Every structure is written in C-alpha cells, then in structure tokens.
Length: 84
Image (cartoon, rainbow, N blue to C red; front, side, top):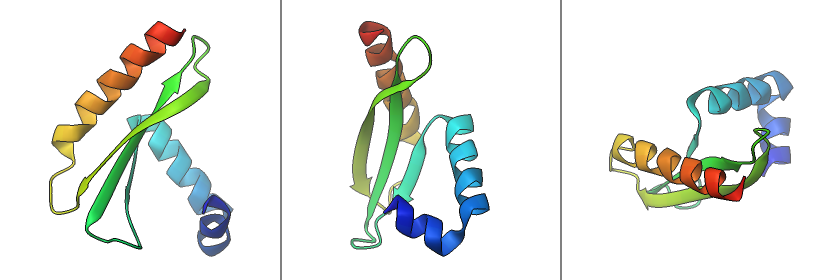
C-alpha cells in the first residue's frame, strides 16, 4: 500500500505526510474499501525512540476522532515505557 501511495502522490507528498505523522504522534486514515471505517495508529517506541510496534483502533467514520487520539497515545506511551 505504501508503494502504491508513493507512486500516486510522489515522494515529496509522502515525506510530508510522514513528517506530519511524526509531529502529531499518530496516523489517521479512512478506508478506501469501506469508507465508513476510520483508523488511528500510533507507534510503540523503545528508549532510543525507535519503533517496536504500533497500536491501532478502528471505528465508524461518522464519529469524531478526537476522543480516541489521547487514549491511544497514552496507551502506546505506557506500553513503550514497559517494553523499554
């Protein structure tokens, strides 16, 4: 999927998206297959700030994503601190 998006949108747009994801701490997307599904994901990092895994949630797109963002990021921070 990343390779397809890179081909469609170009490297500069893809790098811009990655920088924004890193800045806000999570990624957000709406499914192209099921447009009524929205997804959020945030990284689980080690002590050096390197990604170990990701944690995500999916929900109905008509819902506001804001109530889901903080609990998701807090959960990834807690897991990151336990995994080191």
